[in-house]
Length: 510
Image (cartoon, rainbow, N blue to C red; front, side, top):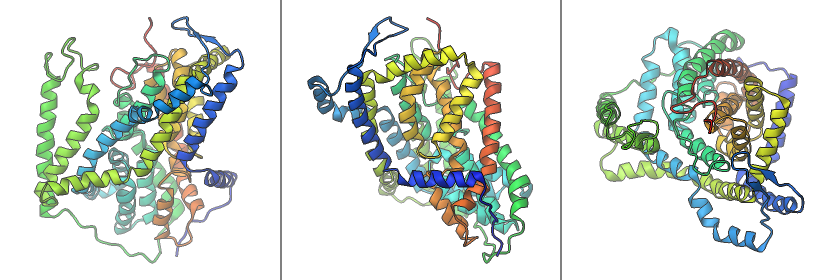
């Protein structure tokens, strides 16, 4: 049987060390609990020294707050519950997943992916698979569990190496995590964390879930193009012809019920879209700001999480009625419940992350660090492009040892967003740079939560494959995405384009 020949290069050895270190780390929730405890101790240490700074915006003297005091103990005890319940990402993620759970549970998402992939011309097959992988991010993990193994089966049925199809899908799903034509669950999650961090500087600042949409939209085609090129020019020639034991399987096309379900879903989503457009297009539309008539600061933009929920729920229910995958309301609730079942570990993680973020804010350590850090970076004289490239590389490196995008951003946002705000950069712009770094090393990070699943998928076609096989296969994608995305970001900076609706590069001047 043909298998991927891998050499122990310096990169492979380095990543093996990273893997061993990462495996030795405790659970992310335990890490945040430790960080919260560390912040308490550091607040006491900081209070012993003269670490006061002057807020550049208000001129107010900022001093560290000691949590190892009677007042600090009272804050920790009395605000523990509200720290958790008021944590910005929690509600947005829960609400988004409730709607997407309906769409996934009724079979709408799976049917759409099959339709997109199977109806594509053979010469565009690779592009469509990478493209579909990027779009699948809207529904969180569905791309990993459905599209990645399906792409291998499709490539094998087309007479091509199945691991090439698997790699192309994985590159789109995971490497293209920060590109999409639609908003997904990660957008409100990161926006919530960015909002919490931005309020260290401006208590009234809010980052919208659509903050990076323009850049995401263009990135979808860049990632799909780069992923196609790497697959065709590097991965497929390296793999050669497949001579393994797996035989081509026929992929069932949509049956009449599924087609009817898609028709019902299309009509329902079209009507819902018409309702939204009817509230946005007229100057006095019912979804615009009632006082100013703006779209950017409107109920539509503020309630975009609700629209994600409603569109996914309406489309899913319509599909379920047409395809007869739901018989009553209990089936709908079952889909919503199933999506919540997967969030047990996330909720535990959020509890400790919320305490850490709250403590970090209370102590003023984040603000003090941001002001001092901004002074250091300003003194270094780094301009927009080298500064952001450095930040992207930092995020990409951290991603190798901590796979969760939200966990990393919960740690990084309270430091970098205030720091860059004081240097004149908006939280939306900083978040955009972070998302590039977070995505490009997903596919070579053993700490990525679905990495072990990808290894299992590959072993179906190559019994001797392991982590090194995945890394050596996916490394060309990682490098190509990093270079391509940085070039796109540089072009974006040079042209001074907003990264999303109302999301400019620089903070407005007072």
